[in-house]
Amino acid sequence: MRASRMPLLARVGSAVAVTALATAGVITATAASATTHKLPTQLSVNHKLIAKAHHLMDSVTGVLSSGKTKLAGETVSLQSRIPGKRFAVIGSATTGTGGSVTFAVAPTRKTQYELTFSGDATHLGSRSSVITLTVPRRLQTQLSIRNKLIALAHHHAEMITGVLKSNRTKLGGKTVILLSRIPGKRFAVASTGTTGTNGSVSFVVTPTKRTQYELIFKGDVMFRPSRSNVITLLKV
Image (cartoon, rainbow, N blue to C red; front, side):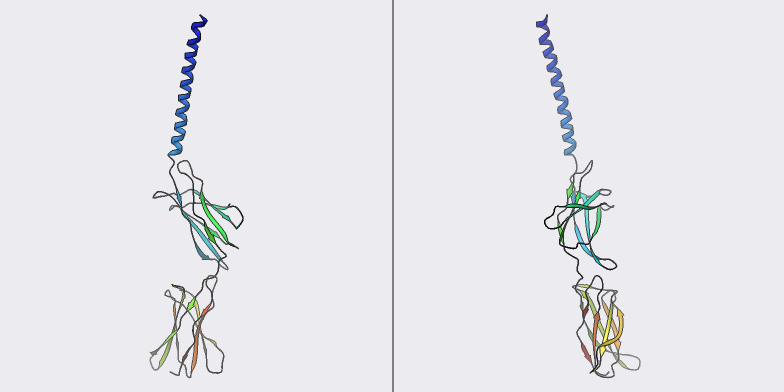
């Protein structure tokens, strides 16, 4: 009787073992399938200089997407490092409806920044490329000057026009000062004006003798000061 039971028990044990292995295989395959079906993501990064009340900062912006879909409501972290150090998280924010997230930074030395997304139940994690920022500096400006004779109601006058730019960007809403001087005197403020949306400002003058004129921009938190050339006008 014992001899006949042993093969039966062995066969039953083998069947249980096979079933267990098959079940484990199904579980493993299911888990692997769940991991495989997470959607890949992409995380971009960009930056631009911004002006605060009394200083400059950089705005670091990223957009989180999966294919053509922008991912909102996801947590994105900002990491930074200075030369010789490792990346460390310095902030986190939630993406908006367009998948975008923004951080304001003010590096005091050369610093690298990177955005990271850890992933969620349906999306894989991703990280942006690395950008390197230096201490924000005010932007250079250029101020032109020109004049033309104009006719007023009862006399002629000169119109002095200037255009304030920063490289190719015309600067509106900036205060420009008109300086003037006659021979033997120093430059003094003759008038002030505000640039229009096209960066231009104009002054009407009626010199009674040989007079020199110059435009100046004193600068602000974002832009460096500049001054135009000097022009000389004769009596109108």
